[in-house]
Image (cartoon, rainbow over all chains, first blue to last red; front, side, top):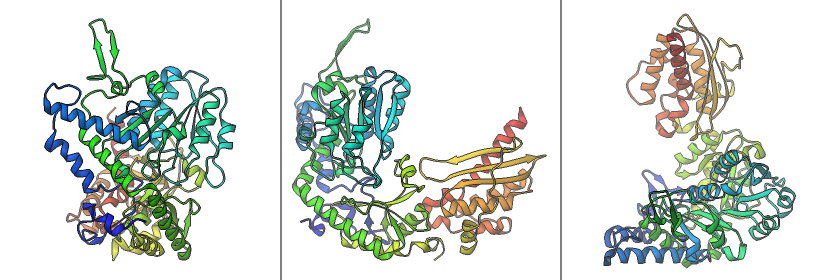
Length: 409
Length: 140
C-alpha cells in the first residue's frame, strides 16, 4: 500500500504545507508531467556538483567518473525495462525517440506500404509518421476502436496485411487510459512482417515494463512523466533493429572515423544514436527515478491509482452532472466533461480551487472524432495523490456550471 | 457583467459564414487551445461595413467575439483600432476608457485568470489580422 503522506515528504512541491500560493495543491495533471522527488533532483545535481565532465571523450579521472555514472545510468534504465544496455538509447524524450524510429525506418518504406496507428494516438506518435508517409509514399491506416474505445487483437488482425510495415501504438492512451495487450499486438504485427513500435509515454510510469515479455521492436518513453527530469527519455530497440535503423542526428561521438571524401563509419549501437554532448544530469536523474519507482513497486502503484480512479468515478456519477468517457478503465486517468460547460471553462473553474487538470484534446487530435466531443477535461493521478485530491476534484466538478464565478466572485 | 457573458455565450451575436469574396477571412486556432474561430469582415472605404464570425470555443472566447462584432460593425478602421487598444489595456490590467468599450467591459476581470486572457482576445486578434491584410492589399 502507498502511504501518500510519507511519499509527499520526498517531493519538494509539497513542501509548502500542501499549498500552491493561496490554493490547496491538488495536482492532477500527471499524464502531462509529474513532480520530482528530492532523490531525483539530488542525483541529477550530482552531475553538476561532483562529476562535471564530458563523457566518452576524456582520458582523465574526472571524465572517467562521468563515463562510469553515465554507463551506470544506462544499465539501471535498461534493467528497469528488462533490456540490455546496448539496446537502450538516451533521447530528449518520447517525441525524439519516436522521430528517431520513424525517420530511421524511412529507407525501408516505399509507395504502397502501410503504417498502422490508432485514432487515440498522441501527436508525437502521429505526426512523425504523417511526415515519413509523405516523404516515402507510404500510407497511414488506423486500427478501428471498439465502441468503448479499445484496441483489440481482433481489430488489429483485420487492419494489417502484407503491406503493413509498421504498427505504432501507445500501450496506454493518454486520454482514455486503456492498457493494450501489447504482447499479442506485437505478435500480430510480426506475423505480417511489420515492425512493432510501443509508445510507452503513459504506460512506463504506471506499470511494469518488460520488453522481453512483450517482444516489441522499439519502445520510447519520457523521463519527466515518471518522476524523472525533463529533457531525458529513452528509445529502446532490439539490437538487430537498432543496427538497421538509420541515425537521424549526426555529429560528435556517434562516428568512429570519417574522411575528406565523405566516408564515414558509425559507432556501435547505442552510441551511434547519441550525437553530441548528452544530457548526463538527466540520465542520472532518470536512473534514480527508476530506482525510486521500483522501490515503491508497480503493484502498489496500480492498486493506488485504481482506488483513486474508482473514487473519482463514483463521485462524478453521484454528482450527476458530468459525462465520464472512461469510467471502465482502471488506470489513473479520468476523462470527462461537466455537461453544458466547455472543457476549458471547467478546467479554469477547477484550477481556481487548486484542482489542476488538463483540458482540450490532450494532443490526441483525431480522438474527438471518435468521442464526438470537441474537448474533454482530464484528471490523471499518481503516487502522491490522495483521497483529498479526488474529493476536491469531485466537489469542484459538482459546481462547475458556475464557471464564470472565477472572474467575478 | 456576468450576465452579459452568459447571454452572449448562449445566444451569440454576429454568427454568420459567408463566401462573399469581398470579405476577408482569418482562421484563429492555436496549438495551446482548442478554440477554432473564424472572423470575416468587409472593409469598405476605411470602414468595417460588416463583420461576422463562426466556429467554436470556450465561453470566454465565444462571448467576446460575439460582443466584438456588435461593437465594431460600422466603425472606421481607425475607430475600431482605438477600441481594440482600450480592450487590450483593460485585459492587461492597465487604465482604460470604459465609455469606448460598452459591453466588452464585461471582460475586465478575465485577467484574474491570466491563462485565459488569450481566450478573451482571440476574436479581436483575428480582426487585427484582417486589418493588416486589408492594409496590405490597399498598398499593392
